[in-house]
Length: 228
Image (cartoon, rainbow, N blue to C red; front, side, top):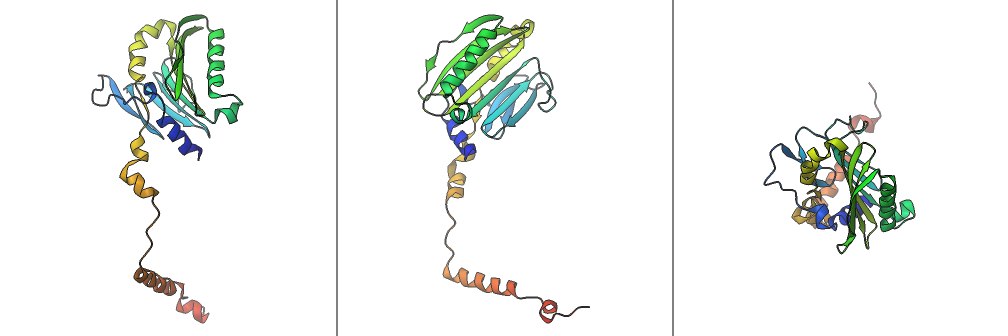
């Protein structure tokens, strides 16, 4: 149930999060990466690495310049997208408070603050962002929380401070991602799958009843109880 709840919530995310990836005009050096298990899409550099992971109430996607060895190692340059559901139950906080606490944590820990986005209400979701230097790294946190639904999404793009400018165009390209492909969960096929099976005709019932009776008969050897 949590899985389908997350699907429905992601479908309602603001345009910044589920904007259709530009599959008809993929920039040179990029490829279309499918984000499982939601079927989402993101443009990633061809020579970068992709990893996905999930928990009971969260999903995680990472695209990095360095190989994370299946998510077991860190990276220096990359983008990570995290989606959290059941925030109230899991943390005791509303999605807004969860995100704002995260925001303040990053703000207080920053070596330098480069940019803070004004909070914007986008209907079902609100958004803010903060771009900071943390030690040797420069990081942009884009933060979303549900105004009426229990979900939060955090997008993190980062690189070493000296490599930030060289990667900003790459991060901008990757920021246009589609978090879920709703075609997988809708349409004629989905509708057919959701409908109950048709009631078999009386004739078919009789045929199946006779077939079941034949299959239930024991083999000759078993019926006589003989042994070789």
